[in-house]
Image (cartoon, rainbow, N blue to C red; front, side, top):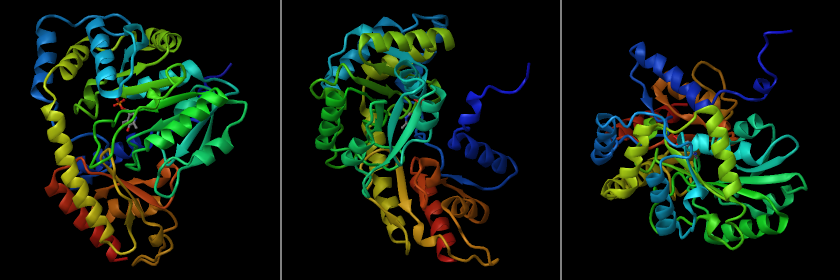
Length: 396
Ligand SMILES: Cc1ncc(COP(=O)(O)O)c(C=O)c1O
């Protein structure tokens, strides 16, 4: 007998974003003026019409358990959205409403992958993918993206084995800001069909996209409806991170498995949030376009400011609200106290300690030598933060 933790816990670590969030919170409580560029959430309030729908749900006592797959009107609204925005035809019973896109991802992986299965993850990638795969008992297989962070189909092809069960992709991408081309998605779709594996497609940033870039769901290619799990949510598009709402659209047996997992873990998504999300989908969308136009201005500013810092390189940000920049030229440089940076984590520690700017080290995304900052902050805050980053790096 033993009161040790389960062996499963030896394989997973706490989400790097949550760990840094706690450290920054502690510094702020101690009175340090920290600028947080580490958190991935829009700085805008949830739009009023959505908040009102949540308040109305409370006032009307819509505060109890709901159907395990989510309320029917919301599932219906999601099917309409998938048709209108993504050209995808799903029936209501091919959609499950869950507690955030993160739960959508973990339940989808758990539903489709297990012991002995391999899951290919192109890197750099979202902090949680590899740990979610490990929690499901499967093995993450990391493959590089191209230098410009586009999908490297050859790398994926080379990594496919008879154990490959799924590939996880995210477009627009966190942390890189890349939007995968329709051609590359078609190539991956063809590979998935010919080699018979799932594609778990995280589309949570689909609306946050810039310039000529277009979001294409990989589920829209021939043969993909039966092997794609579309993951999406409300956190980013409608600035609803705290409402904890996401969804899965897929083949009926996959969706039923997701609902089964939800029924044994969280029971149902929150009733109040479901009414708010129904309004988010049915109501006016002008708050989304406003938010994206503001992000676009900040993206131009941040990209330019970073590329103006000697030795820093930031690739074109096509979507989402992150700048992912290369600081490899700073690794090995000597600080005033004689110490040297040996990795990106030390560069981030230095920026937090000396300049009070919290940034995410690229290593958290399997990209050593890079840093991710979120530009979901006001222009004023971003200006101050970039002044501090520039000053911090220039004085090395
Ligand atoms: C790529 C990606 N997927 C999923 C999530 C989780 O979103 P949610 O708040 O809906 O759980 C995030 C949140 O940062 C994300 O960046």
